[in-house]
Length: 69
Image (cartoon, rainbow, N blue to C red; front, top):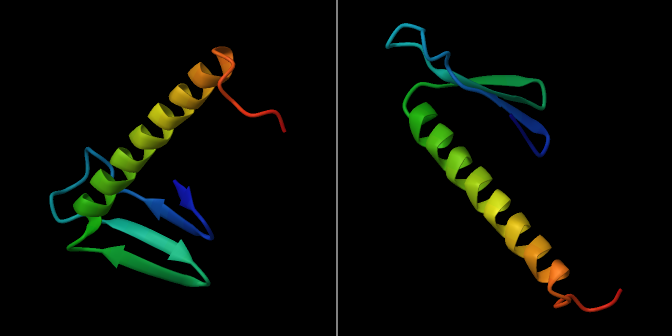
């Protein structure tokens, strides 16, 4: 998953328990040993919120609630 100029790669679901996700960007590679699971959960919640906001925005547009641009 790309977030801005960074790319997050979660640990594979089938990997060993000590495996962790990584964050790549600006020529650096950071292993998220402690925060990987929390970061994955945060990105999942953020994605869900973005989908819900998009759905609501589109529903308002269909109802004629958007201002003309």
